[in-house]
Length: 85
Ligand SMILES: [Zn+2]
Image 1 (cartoon, helix red, strand yellow):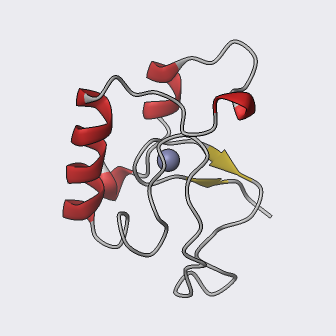
Image 2 (image 1 turned 90 degrees about the vertical axis):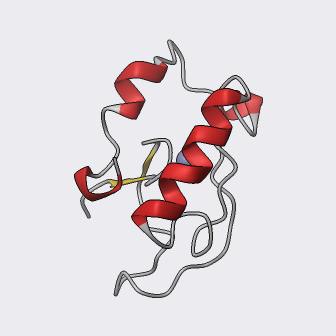
């Protein structure tokens, strides 16, 4: 399985929260930006709006204990799918 990247913050996931068909969001929250899959990332516009709020609020990790070692925000943001940047 290819990695899946959060449409809001670019965090990588082993499995897509949008399901195997890419159209069945599980409505969990991103561990980094806190976006609800299926809601905050439902459209490119929604993803950009939520991202702007998240960045304006300091781009903190929603679950700080899940922070990858050597977390690099800029590198992660570069992983956002092109259509949602
Ligand atoms: Zn995210």
